[in-house]
Image (tube, rainbow, N blue to C red; front, side):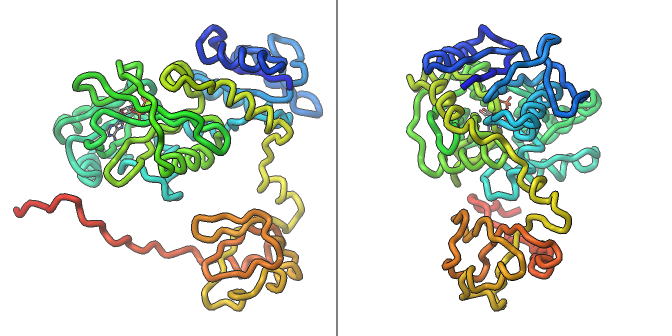
Length: 396
Ligand SMILES: Nc1ncnc2c1ncn2[C@@H]1O[C@H](COP(=O)(O)OP(=O)(O)O)[C@@H](O)[C@H]1O
Ligand SMILES: [Mg+2]
């Protein structure tokens, strides 16, 4: 294949390793400075210029977009997507993961464990927000920090309030997050490539530092991950829209808690900690997927007027329960079942003989009018039953 690596750091360890891995496997590869692209929307088809000249044909692109150029970098990646060039990480995926609030919002409906987080604006809402996540000590984070910069542990509510006020006065937005004490300055970095975790390490903070980032002096060691941690890492990356990602998780008492998903994970620390050829795994994965450029399914399938994609839920009392998909009458109503979700399992392209159960969720393509009656009413939010705290609450 012919691969473009988008990077502004051609000499960095990660870029070099990826380039070498591609060359070793007989691929054509170029490292292209992301900032030298021109997005061209003047012709009939989406196009790209590089250093002022028309870009030659590529089969795949591997974006390594730095934090400081997210807007321009994702625009370039999006243009590659429009040109049907395969990318493991979509422009959307990169933007989603870049902003810690946006990432948490997207993950929060998918049953992924995360440290309790709140985001408020008004001064009057700060103290209640801190209390909602468990009180002091509390973690305060800038939305777009990296390498541990912009992550602060405030020992008391007073200090937290002062920090938040200071940051907000300089127009910085901050998250308020529960401090996961039991992780004791350690966290897990899982490197996801495609559908699996190819390598994982534990990072341990130096001295009394609570941030385990390597840039903050953290040390790294190889770990064998629990299947639960692997599952959460892979799901988090996929939900974000990333097939190559570094997923950071805290080891909390009740399992993995995802802090962030990185779309351009550094390879040096994790390759040296694990002695694994991660660059090679990334290149092999891209080579394997190159025939499948990103398609926005919903967008493409909605182009026929009156048709679209919807998720239908099999109601317990409906006459669909106990019927096979073939006998359900869906096909006669011009509705095709794309996937069947049952609990946490997914059956893609289910056969006609699959028998439907109550609470099955069917992702369908069909006439919107026909599907309307089957779309579940917007669920009324029920107050979740409050979990009892681990420690008994001390009596007043
Ligand atoms: N809620 C938390 N509880 C305990 N430690 C945390 C928490 N959030 C972050 N940390 C520590 O701080 C480090 C940096 O936080 P992170 O959200 O990953 O920001 P960055 O993007 O700067 O790496 C983490 O690797 C972890 O060691
Ligand atoms: Mg991090």
